[in-house]
Length: 396
Image 1 (cartoon, one colour):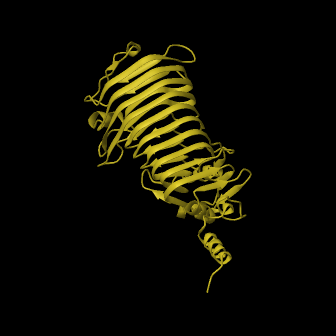
Image 2 (image 1 turned 90 degrees about the vertical axis):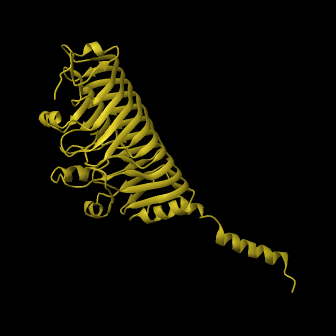
Image 3 (image 1 turned 180 degrees about the horizontal axis):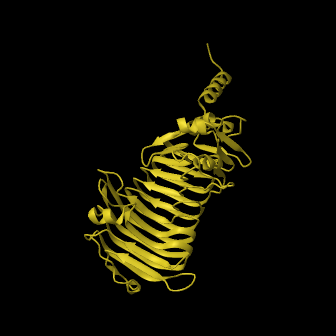
């Protein structure tokens, strides 16, 4: 029997329809009125590009495991909003062993881009209020990059995270560009622990061109953060650009190396440029090396420049059990602006030569009135601003 050309054309059409890429509408998400997490997960598995259109709010009521992805583009033009369902999230958010954290969303894999100009909303207010009466409450991070490489997150707004906004956990080649991070409480309860970024066990990370209003570290370099560049940030209400804290846990070796933070405006903050490491008995060890804070402009900052190598440790215990985290090759360059009180710089190291090659150059921070106060302990300071410091106290 001779089969016609029309017959073969029909078969080809059926085959193509069966094995074609997902329909475009499956990759452009709409709100269902319920939990949109399942279809969001399905779309991220099936589609190379997933779009949350402008004007669309996806409600996420169950956790998002998006690990192991490859070659994905998520365009968030609308809003991804996590439900304020504390009973669900306290039992089901992904557990992060480091510092006993939990997260709404794990995003991992290779070659991923998140952009679009839209918003990630953590519904933080219920968490701020609940934490005020229950300090053991584990509050979720909005977005955790987990075992991810070659990832770019740009042109995104993140609001009201219950705790940290971003965690980079075991990442490689990560870029954040042009993010707006904003946490605000509408009640008397504070927005505690709302770090902008925590970089943990990750290499080659860039965070740039962003505006952060929060209630804890603007950026923190946690254990084993290496080759990190921070540039062009505006941080308001934060606890600073912070290395650490390090050396907290017995048996652990914490390393932070090759970190540059440049062109940072720090306002209404607890700290400006800060390094913090634990001392005392039964703590860990590590190394902080080649760290540069360059061109910071500070306004109303309590502690514009800080090294605290006795973090969370009494003076007596620090003298008896100096920090096992060695700090070396540190540069505070071109730090200007105003403090909130007389203290403008405090460099406090453990005894026994645990700090070395500490450099302060072109330091022009001034208090709102009166004379500037500089303090130092167990450290030899070099640089053209070293003479501003008195003879350093020696302990131990």
